Every structure is written in structure tokens, then in C-alpha cells.
Image 1 (spheres, rainbow, N blue to C red):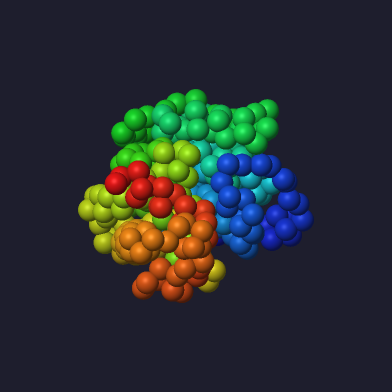
Image 2: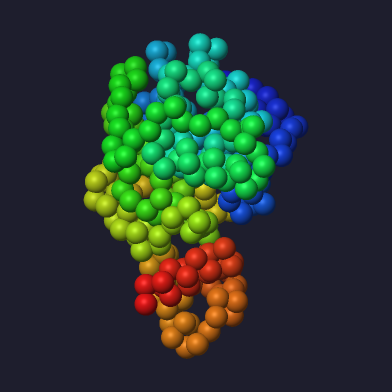
Length: 297
């Protein structure tokens, strides 16, 4: 058995570390059952609290993609066989605290720590607002469009396709395993967070998902940053288009209501046509789309 899962539910259910972060998803960062989910060729997903951690575990290679919170990062590290020697690579897909607060645990044991060039500044600005500067660990290496490295017998490639969920979202491709961690570019059947203050652009997000869909194949497996209740954090290329279609339908619904003279406040809790099972649309989703459309007029 490639992974030790003993005591994970007990360990991670016993402790909660409160650490502020920029995303309103803080209140929604409920624990999923702490679990390692192998995908293929040593690549898998770890769920606990916050954004899904992707990992590569091989005899001579250990990689983590995102870091959740300090308590769940410790649980992840303790359950990763061979982690006593440290990580070869830590990647942050973007700056939000439910993906980077655990850097305080994982970065000190990682030989390399990489993210998009926008991430350190966005992370620092969020920490200033939340008063958590002392708790931060920032990427020591950055990239603009692409980055890759061989780790063991795997190639880890990072891709930036443009502003979307933030202005600094990376997709991480384990090329030989053909597994992609999307970060928060995919909320699988769940209302997303659109971080307008960090350069989010829903029209750009739609294009990013289409570009990624064209780049990867039907055999590619995808690890998502978040998933709705009862939905998996691992899926297929088709799920990228589901996310795209939601964002398109959301934009269409907002445009129609704006044309009818409604304000953002009047649109709160609307359901997006065709996506009623995603639930009512909160202000954190409605407001940035309204602002984006009004800015484009």
C-alpha cells in the first residue's frame, strides 16, 4: 500500500488552526474527510480542509501542490511515506490562504518552492489586510508563462493561461502521469470565488478553461481545487467545460438582469439557468460579475 492513512481522520479532526486569509471561502472551508486519493503513477489528491493538495509520491521524488492550512499540512506530511527526507518541490497554484497558509509547514522542508510571478505580491497584500504577515512563507521561485522541472522520473510543468480566478493562477501538469492540478480554476459543481481585487476576470476565466481543454487530452485526469457536496475532487477534461458553461451562463444571466434595470443586490440568491443544482448565487459571485460588465460598457 503506497500511503499510510492511519489516524488521519482522528488527527485532523482533533485540531483546527485559525489563520485569516483573503478569500471569503474561509467560512466555507469545512473539512472533507482527510484522505489520500491515488490517481495514477504516484500522483494523487489529499483532502482535508481548504483547497485540495495534489502530490507526487515516488521512492526518489516528493512533490506537493498547494498547502491548505498548518494543521492539515502537518497531517498531509505525516501521512506521506518518505516525507522525513523532505519535499523536492512545493507549488502554490495561487495566493489564497486556504492554499498557502500551510506553506509555514511545507516550505521549510521543500528544496524548491514555485508559483506564478503574481503570487508573492498578492499573498503579501492579503496578509497585510488580515494582519498575518508573520505567518507567511512566500515562493522563492516564480515564473511568467511556463516552468518545468524533472523530479524523479516525472516532469512537473506549470502553465499560466491568463487572468481568471485571480491574475496569478497556475495549472500544474504531471506530464508522464498525465494528471493536472487545476487549483481554483475549477470549482467542481460549486459556486466559485471570483477575486476581483486580485485581478479576476470571468471572461478571461472562460478563455483559460477553453485553452486548457484544448491543450490536454481525454485521457488526462484533473484534480480540482474545490468540489460541491457529493462531487469528487478528481475528474475529467469535460469538467473544465462544465465550469466554463457555468461562468458563461452566469454572465448571460447578469447581463439580462442589468438590462432589466436590476442592481447587484437584487440579483443575490438568483439561480443560474441550467445550473440550478449549484444553489443560489451569493454576493461574492454576483458583485464582481456586475462590476466587470459595467466596466466593459
